[in-house]
Length: 193
Image 1 (cartoon, helix red, strand yellow):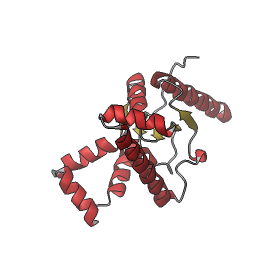
Image 2 (spheres, helix red, strand yellow):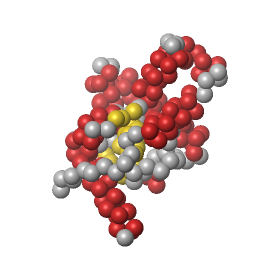
Image 3 (tube, rainbow, N blue to C red):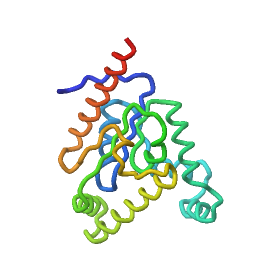
Image 4 (cartoon, rainbow, N blue to C red):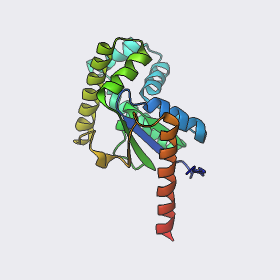
């Protein structure tokens, strides 16, 4: 069933997930399909560096010294995005606003070896290096959500839709998200009637 998307004013899509599960690819496709912007940690860090006219190394040093609380800065930037426009927030950044209402919160996961293979291909590194990157990322994301919300980032209750990205191609995942969004929107309209 193909969904014709009629966006409400300022919809918010949150796409969180595991490294190698395809969050950025899915967010980019969803963004193109809907004609709305998407933001992730990489973009936020780039904006911080440009706005403050500093290098990534200087930012890293400021974060390490405690001069800058990067999570707080990025969360505030995300909240500004949410208030200003239609937006898709993806990846690690999505975890920073799990406590905020969203039109749909998606979690993309995939088996460990699948994710390691995807990371190895994308980064051009060995499978063992990719496995280490995936392990590190999983631990970092787990610690972030536990620190911010005292919750387990893999707790499915945090999300509206959990998708195994190893079983669907990215365009199919976008359709699943849009179908879920439309069903939820229709349900909200019916409950108001």
